[in-house]
Length: 98
Image (spheres, rainbow, N blue to C red):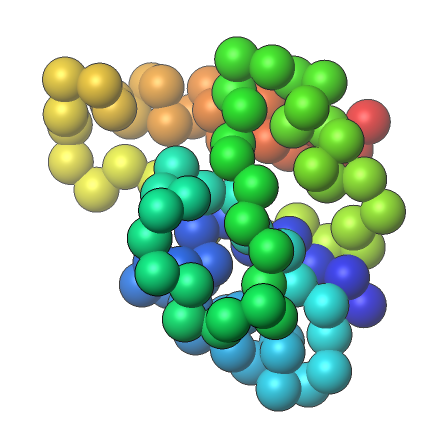
């Protein structure tokens, strides 16, 4: 199985990614933190979210069997609100399904 996890280098995504890798599945991640240390070395390739470039977002999801979306907003921030989070989640899901 080929899985894409949003935020595989973060709190929830990290544990999901580890379980999938241990089970022998291929994993990629979509992230806002491309410069964050990759705890999986070369096992998990990171791609930017590309919310402003839907074609690139769609391309990074091509040939994935499953989308595990851990993208969320814990608290309101001047750049990230709950409404923006819902909109971006819709973009991710739409790109995955197209």
